[in-house]
Amino acid sequence: MKLAAIAVDYDGTLTLDGRLSPAVVDAIGYARQQGIRVILATGRRLAHLANDTELAMFDAVVAENGAVLDFPATGRHIRLGLAPPAAFLDALTERGLSFMTGECVVETEAAHALAALVFNRDRMMLLPAGVTKATGLRQAKDAVRLVTRESEPAEVEALSRLCEVPLDAGVLASLDITEAVLLPGPDEAGGRLVRFRVGARLTTHVRHRQKYCDMPVASAQAFVFTGGGSAGPRARSLRDLVTLLGTEPAARLEGHFARHDISRWIREVFRDGVLAARLAEIERRTRHDPPRVVAESLAQAIRARYAFTN
Image (cartoon, rainbow, N blue to C red; front, side):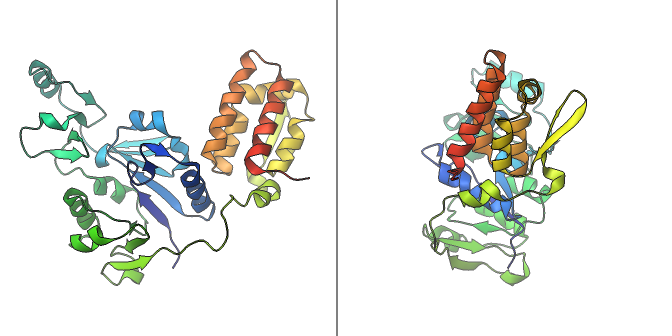
């Protein structure tokens, strides 16, 4: 079976105690390098999420419990619901309720609930009628749906609507940490939940570091050093890039650093959001550090991430 895409929740699924581990980031990057789209489906507001993680590691982000769809690589952004009415926000303010607003969602403490409303863990979320995570996932189609343990009735109901068949909540709630299910939809599922156990890796996962050091990307994806109105040498691998950072003229490098070209290439071509974020921090030093110093810091960060050998 060839997976086309994976949709995953954020809090409590990708994170542990609110933290996204490097191993999870590596797994996401590896999946994308195999041609699998990774879609994040979360109740969080997009701006809130961006403070905690690098959105560019995902192909698409379904935020605000399905009301907002964002494609980080292209900048495409779709709002699937209506903005909260000003009169409604004024009424909440008059009642002395503290709240935060997204593009569609209004979020406050769950203790403020006075009726049957939508909850996201310990938060109360007010959304336009009919908006769920499934709303956003339908817009990010072509997914083969894999789900780990799910015991929240609202989430099971949303998944049932996504699959257009009732799902067995008991099965979803009984999965242990090593199990998952294939949801109805793909031919392999046969219209039912297919329970399976996730096998252990046969080898230790170390990002296949040496392979990424020297594996060339397609010519069209090569990094081209430019300056003075002309194209210079091209880097088609991480090793090429590190070598050229040490040999290219400072004047040519400075323009690339100021535009954050190096970190953008790592993010968009190698799909390594963690390294890209680190390189972006180093590129910002161009404001006060000489280009040659910045170039060496960039090269050191890449060598450290991918454990270069001579």
